[in-house]
Image (tube, rainbow, N blue to C red; front, top):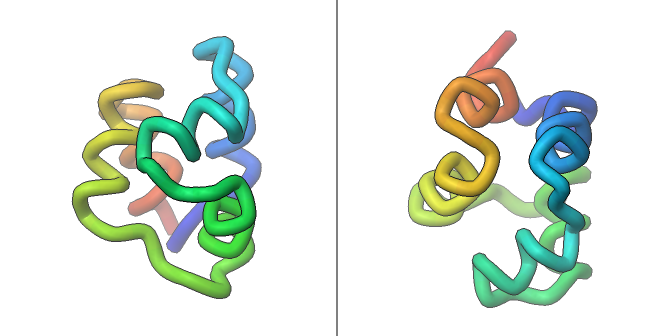
Length: 66
């Protein structure tokens, strides 16, 4: 299950913004917000890209923690 709080904390820790994630994933900010709110799912390739940006441990906590 996606953890929005940990996602936002990982962005702050890594000096990233939603814009940076959107550009890396080649999607709009609106699409990122939909994914954050659970209206749409992250694709495996998107999770991999985010993991490279915020670190694999952070990504595990963001996408796979209970």
